[in-house]
Image (cartoon, rainbow, N blue to C red):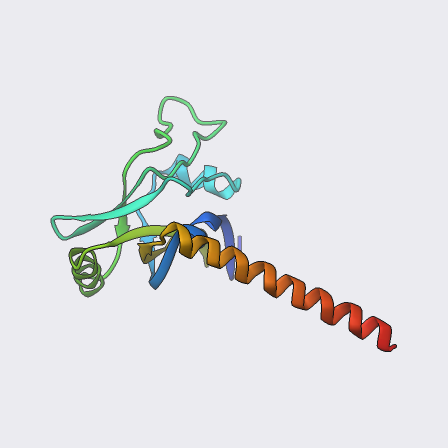
Length: 158
């Protein structure tokens, strides 16, 4: 059987880019059990409540929901267990310094398979205030309106 190539996205945290200001992103591997991998290959996961933290020089991913594998039995995993992240020591040190600076948190943005290996994209992020969220919505609507106007103008010119 040939090895998988490319990237297959399992889940994305679309709300994160609205709720947080993303400073920097990192790619990390995940320590998973067999039934978790099988469940992810079915395309089932939820990152919306997830967060990462650093404890004793190791990075962990918590509150990410990977549902139990449908054909699993007593060896099935618990759906919201804490999972270890695989990062280089230097990256963990950078992340811990960023969090210690205050106001920053680690959030998962995307869960995917890269060449057959489960990866998670985590971001150092700072929470947005309410007025910043309104401004983001306003910018998005203005951009849509401008694109709509350009489209209708181009149709009239034909």
